[in-house]
Length: 223
Image (cartoon, rainbow, N blue to C red; front, top):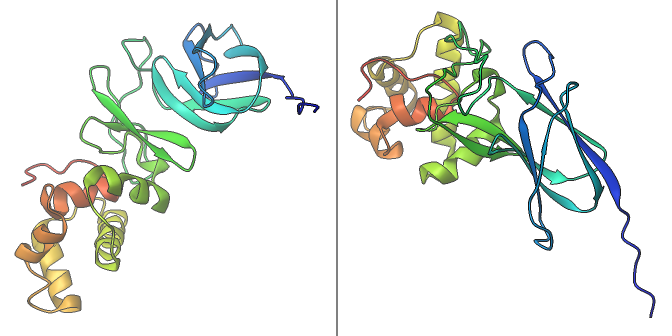
């Protein structure tokens, strides 16, 4: 009986900075195949920001400087765009965004985490606040809900979209008082209350957990 021929191809990972498009040189790139039959393959990017992995087949994950940035089929060139460099590398970009689609909030000493969103890794800080608000999507909220221990309902989504709309309109974070005022009108006195909002967002209330799911920044004086 003839065995199926497995097509082996060369896979290249091109790493660039998201904001400038500049190649990221000499950064560690690791390929981890899903079949588990081969050990991790380690390379570094060249002057063009490319790490080449010959004779690869199947699917797997791509790690940049120790953090996963891609998961899926390994086929041809895989582009990884970094908002900032982590792990003590030089050239870290910083600065809070001026709006929802503003720049990266990453800073040199920030402890980062990530969440898998539709086959790619989205960077957050250690508490789950998105590192670059412009990367937020409905899929991000769905992916983060498992980490947050929630099952998103229409009420959660209504709060999330209200928080984002409020920030887009006023360019400031929404306070719990503002939320209560709004949702008391739309949901009624019982559900539009501080108590109920904290019940549906048990990990820090609507300001903390709500802002994380909405892809917004940490609010001063959160409770």
